[in-house]
Image 1 (cartoon, rainbow, N blue to C red):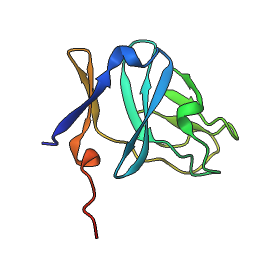
Image 2: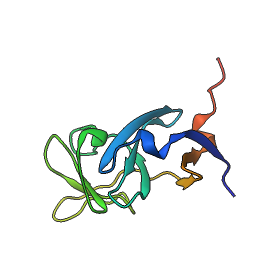
Image 3: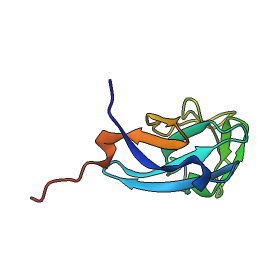
Length: 111
C-alpha cells in the first residue's frame, strides 16, 4: 500500500478550484470538485504545456486554459477528439486533510 503525506486542508482549495504542489515528479495539480472530491494530475497539458491548475473545472473534467483540451480527472485521459493523457497520482481526503502519495514528496539526494 502506498504511504500518504498530508499536504494541507481540504478547505484550503475552493470548490471547483485547484492548487499546485511541487514534488519530485514535477508540479501536481490538486483539484477539488463541487462535491468535495479530490483528484491529483500532472499540471502540464501534453498538447502545449498549459498549466491545468489554471484551467476550468467542470464535473469530473478540467479544461486546459491554453487550447481548451479537456481531461478526465478520474483517468487523466483527454476527452473528445483530443489524444493524450496526463499522469494521475494517489490522493485522498481523511479528516478534512488532503493526503498525497508520500513517494512524491521525498527529496532527491545530492549528486
